[in-house]
Length: 138
Image (cartoon, rainbow, N blue to C red; front, side, top):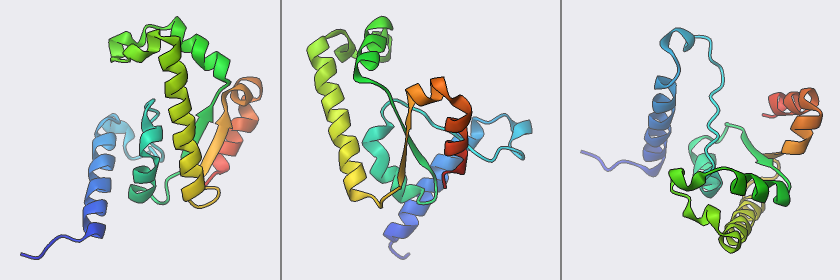
């Protein structure tokens, strides 16, 4: 047989991801669902791969104030999720710095406007305008 191409491998991977996500939608809803949102905490690490697999999918980056993030992490028990770093202030700050550096990298290397930043505070204070901004984003 012939050797698979990189484009074919990317397309197969993308289809596998979409099929897996689609299986999580109740069967009676699949015909009407037009968007699937995946809001896992650590997708910031995979923005480049998400861009390659889904070049037309919106990438929405929700941001929040540093202090609110730190307080929220301390308030909830993330250790059950295997996030031991969430109990140490120094590790939390270091992880946040890595996250910010990673997102800055994606902003630098991806086409301008590829990532839509939505501020959590804007969602809270003006949910309708924020939702319209998200829905109008390609």
